[in-house]
Amino acid sequence: MRKRLPYRAMPTMRVHIEEIDIRTSGKGTYEITDQIAKILTRSAVAAGTVTVFVQHTSCSLIIMENADPTARRDLDEFFDRLVPENASYFEHDTEGPDDMPSHIRSVLTRSSEVIPIADSRMQLGTWQGIFVFEHRRDPHRRKICVTVVGV
Amino acid sequence: MRKRLPYRAMPTMRVHIEEIDIRTSGKGTYEITDQIAKILTRSAVAAGTVTVFVQHTSCSLIIMENADPTARRDLDEFFDRLVPENASYFEHDTEGPDDMPSHIRSVLTRSSEVIPIADSRMQLGTWQGIFVFEHRRDPHRRKICVTVVGV
Amino acid sequence: MRKRLPYRAMPTMRVHIEEIDIRTSGKGTYEITDQIAKILTRSAVAAGTVTVFVQHTSCSLIIMENADPTARRDLDEFFDRLVPENASYFEHDTEGPDDMPSHIRSVLTRSSEVIPIADSRMQLGTWQGIFVFEHRRDPHRRKICVTVVGV
Image 1 (cartoon, rainbow over the protein chains, first blue to last red):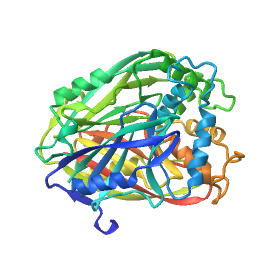
Image 2: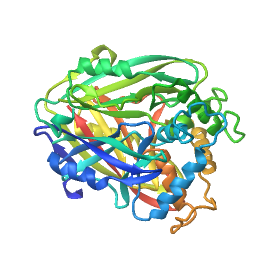
Image 3: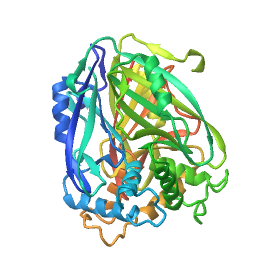
Image 4: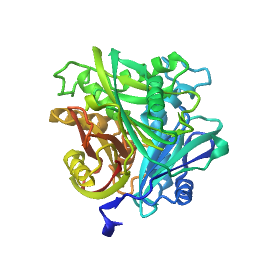
């Protein structure tokens, strides 16, 4: 990429949108980098941005170290301690003890991730992966909207 | 939306920008989803993204459960405990005990939210609302810049 | 800006991408607002968005109060207490005691910041600065990808 920068493009801009379903099986991280990369290929966009957006408030998105699984286990443990299920002051618990913590954990992380595209590829760092961060205990089907804007 | 995906558009791209003022009356969440939707309608953009950006460092933006008000009360309580006003090590307190906590709470949440647009509508999930998260005790007038990019 | 809003543009859209290197010298915040502003000038984009993206998982981006340095010192102290280096349950410590905390601090802040552009300028508030938030103790060379999309 470096040789061609600054990249400057003015041909036909386009918008390409796809929705994907992710099945989760309890709290934790689920990598979706490859699925986003495939959508990018189908979009035929060479330069621009891809916006990944999760249509829920009890799971979220993160960009995280994708090589060593212990890093994601430690992350889970940290969030379980930071936002414990048994907080005495929680009023919102209609769906169980993991209901309110799931909203707080979502607010502390992200509903969307925006990743740059150059040379028809996401410009992720070597160790960066895109993950759905599931905050509920039960299995869920999660909808992710992926929007590619560029040339 | 589902029948038409993948959405692929190459007609005239446009940029539509508006600024809105939100009056807040103390710490808490203030929903702005409808105001963003109206700007989207005026933009006449059918597919792309809308970027909501708060021009302050003592309030922020979140996407949060918008049905049950107890969820947002619990969120307020969580943040009051996570970032207490009376931390003994705070040096930055020129504007009072809620000054430094407001910057930290902003860093822990978001300055911008990017939401996908398809079929001329924001692709929010059923329970997702966009909120200004006010971190100061006193009333404030907050400026939000809304940028729609798409076709 | 106010007089001309709503801003509505439909001329030639463009994408301008540049990569910048930031040298950090230990934990803390490093302002990059001016460097982003210069890229924006070179892009010749008058209206749209600029996406700043950090290609690492052990440093991150924040938008923060840029006037009083004590605000950023208090922020450092808060994060050192929120994500301590000596957590007994951390398994991922290959690169030292600041390894796992750096990933968690990145997840709690941002990999990307999206800032609106109008009148050829970033629409930042008076006190907003864009910072690389370094979470490692040792000096690092950090890569930031800056993508301008607009007209």
